[in-house]
Image (cartoon, rainbow, N blue to C red):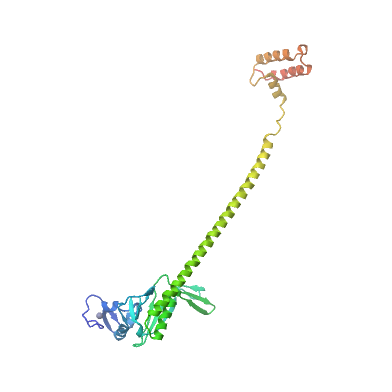
Length: 298
Ligand SMILES: [Zn+2]
């Protein structure tokens, strides 16, 4: 079986088109958007596509994701299109999520290229992950916001197409403006970073002051509490009961024997007897306590 495009014998894979098979080599040279729906294209249409796209052989000056500018052609997703063949270049957006479900949705950006002759419209998905389009819905009005770089590059290509020039000036303008923008962005970030640090420092200082204040309050509270509990623990000692006073006076603790008690009584009586210079009151107290303690003696 021969390839309907290059007429060579097909070795290996053959790919079905709308009217016949082509070889892997011819298929590989097609843009992604056409590969994705190869069965809907006739061999004649594919041949026409091949007249406007080619291998990227030029060195590119600037690039934005998978779109690159060379001197006389652009490279998109790996294939080259000569500037002289381009009639119009634009961006399109395909929202991925139900667009009435949210105000902003993400989706796929495509680069649409319309050629002069043969007249072909190629719509290539733009894969770069960093380049996202935001699709915003305000009531029923829909606006797309493409990445600045991609929009700028496409605009410059269209300008060159309209002016029928090469892409030298377009690439220069793009580089200059993107460079300036990056510098401005970097300066903005630096400023934001400085402001963030200042805010953090202020917050840290506030937190420190707050901590000190709280500690002071805590210390004062503790002091007051100490004063309070101090007063409480130093409360006046409870007066001794007569039994305790008796034990104290006789210097005895339970259990004690009557012999011990009598011995102590003799000592105390000698010491406090009115005849020996003691007072009557104390002597009577001794006798009274003796009678009390006697009941507890063994
Ligand atoms: Zn082929």
